[in-house]
Length: 287
Image (cartoon, rainbow, N blue to C red; front, side):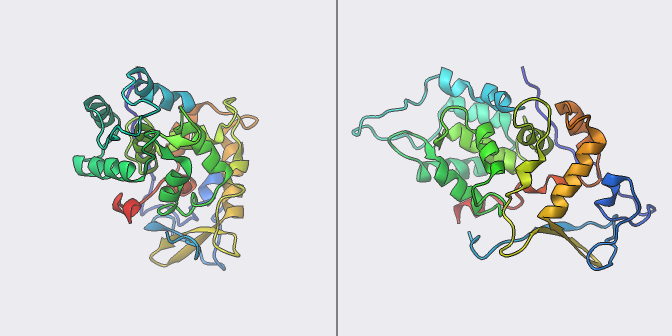
């Protein structure tokens, strides 16, 4: 029986600490002067801003599988339907109870997601095509609007029945994980599952090599401060992860619980995990 996971950011910020670059702590070295010699105030991080290109208007796999196996066992939703049968537009009572235990969505938010699913799903299969799912997620995540190794690995984690489509349960649970509203998986746990591609405990940082960046630029996102900003390029992001991995792993290998513990207690966790979660309202998915 899985126990609900907990989401906790420990930033270790203190006004009395020396000003440091948010990435300097990972290397245990002296403060790094970034952004044309401007030293970013380590203790006053306000927000991280995604970089949107003009085209972007718009525990482990088994862990998630164990949570939604009931969708197969209960045989609530057949995979094939007669044309004469009216397709369902609501979740069953069992499905609703299950989702309430797994997510922190309010009833209004849950209704919004259910309505969105049945608006976009394929009536013959009762599922949502993967292309439709990622088109929706791509509207609110600049890192996932294009196909990438990271998105492929997320599909492997989120989809347990069919690689071509999402069930309503998979749709809501995966959305909950990306919006940090899941009780069973935190952003740190998701990062580990994505990097641990072969389930060997060896973390593969190459997963970041084709993340979407700003057009004609290496820029991923911007960390904004009262006195300036810190531009995080893909090169800097990957290099920082490499130093982080080498510092806390042996030959690139690390167990899941240790990884989550160390990352949660790292002052840069919100920067390192930024591509793995979505900020904003669910309503943006419906726009």
